[in-house]
Image (cartoon, rainbow, N blue to C red; front, side):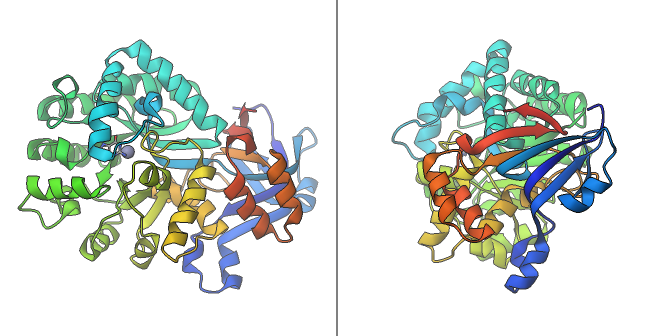
Length: 438
Ligand code: GUN
Ligand code: ZN
């Protein structure tokens, strides 16, 4: 915790609800708060005390409050990455393969290194440094099959006081022997990790079968048992990313209606379940995601990099399915949520659906928090929320500075920042009110 009240003065934007559910431009503005000269006030516990116009709030500040000014910057809640693999750092930007070959060629060999706890700790440190220097303050993270990978990750995240979710991969078939567990060991190792880490400080656990092809029915059943025994843990897996993967799932589970139904059959859907990708879904699957309040993690940079396809955000919105953004490092080739938003914009353009600056930043903050069922804790600057935030510099690059000078409205400036920005724009990242990076 910090010693006294602190305050940050500058341009501030945060969301109160999803802009897509407001019909007109005027009512859309009810879904966010924008202060040209704003003040974010943080109490001694690192929680938001107030957020509003600087002029009004300054009067109520205690005399010893420390005020930091952020000229030419935008302050927003920290970014939330709803799908990422910490053990895949070393294979980022690997050449030439689509999903199934990419897993065999690059991913599985890289993940084998995580049987070594010291190596896992070293990569966890590198990974968390990358997240924070990109303005990402919370992530839903895959470990490897080795429980020690998750121990290493949580140890490092706890030291940094981060709100992070992670889980040990459950995988008992269709991968090299050195990466396989069994239904029994995956159950008992996951259970031990839940008891050790779930709800310790700001950490939470996610039951994590890699995807349907690498789990036997017995293992998926064990995953369902864990969710029943620990009803407030999270769940993450991959869903309908690549056409060959979808055909494979159809062959492996011929008795199931569709890909999602494989997970549904084992009771793995729900409000804390996040399915990465969801590119090739039919209407029945969309409907079932909505009925169960399950979420999709949209990973545009990965979908382009490994050539999986174009995600239909419009379908998700029609069905009112919650969507967060994910980098999917290292299927994705960047840790930057700004660069992820840039690719999401282009994917929507290709489908004749433009993606607004507000909608995309919503998905990266409060929308992401809702997919993780953490919106009581993080995602915006409402009173009592944990003060994880990012300060972005409109003048970080010559091109951005030049472009910003051409803009006349805030929405234009925001859009330019989101399109042209990357980690160079992330000037400072704060965790529970304390500067962690910058
Ligand atoms: N499907 C199964 N495993 C993986 C993985 O590690 N990355 C991605 N992008 N998709 C997967
Ligand atoms: Zn992934």
